[in-house]
Amino acid sequence: MEVDAYRAAKNIKIIKAVREAEKAASAGNMPVLLSGEDSYGKELLARKIHSESARKHRAFQTINPSFITPDIAAAELLGWKKGAFAGAKEDKAGMLAGSGTLYFEDIDRIDENLQTRLYKLITEKKYRPLGTNHAVTSNVRIIAATSRKLSDVVKKGAFREDLYKIFKSMEIKLLPLRELKDDLVPMAMYLLDYYRKKYETGHKEFSETAAKFITSHDWPDNLRELCHVVKKAAVLSDSPVVHHNDLILDVPSKYSIYEFLDEKLSKYLADIGQIRGGSLYGAVISEVEKSLLIIVLREAKGNQLMASRILGINRNTLRSKIKQYEIKS
Image (cartoon, rainbow, N blue to C red):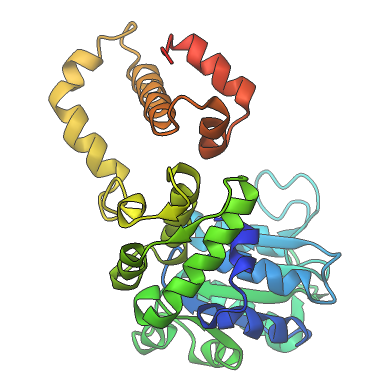
């Protein structure tokens, strides 16, 4: 999802969170909680808060505890002194050093120890790097995000209630698109205008059936899905009027890449394994890339400039790939 596409709808009620973010930007050191379902561009909103705050010229850092162990998370955040653990050959400042903004993805996933450290950081403005008992002052602002209802996580005993109350005082809620039916068409119109200007497609507008589809669809992947669908329609629709069929997704959003590969490859795994000296990885990647290029070129009716824009690659790179895979235009 593009930052400009997110900004394009800032005057729509659906993105009232943007206006709330603007208020949060001026709230100094106050921690912020961004809550809502996945695929809603929470990091973009966090960056907006940072970029419009007095910290805009300082570092914006991101950490996701879901993808690293608690020990690594603590080390990255706190930093360490030389000799704090095996491999700590020199001092290293952690992400809590300085006075920028620290964005926590999946704040509900951090362990109890890190929750305690974070609570002390927010309330005392101090932390202790690993390997020392000396407290260091921090002026970092914390912006956290969660796709779960944090109050439920507190009830289960998996998140500190006092820490939750701190974040609760400035929580920005992102409602799912299915609960904002009245805003969907205006939102899509903003995005359509943004994409048609960006890709110089000429005037575009939605037909009545397209507008009905936009309103009736549940948009399970939220803003990311809406951006994708409108972008595709803006670039690939043949006429100035975007019809219902131009908005239909090729693959149901709940059908994952894993499920697709599991279904297709399980039947031919033995044969594919023999391709190119048993290089399954190389064989699959090249076949997927070739197929993707063929499909996009077909959708773009052979227009390489349009195809390169859809793929997000340089036109010369596309030409090179066409030659490499001997794709006939």
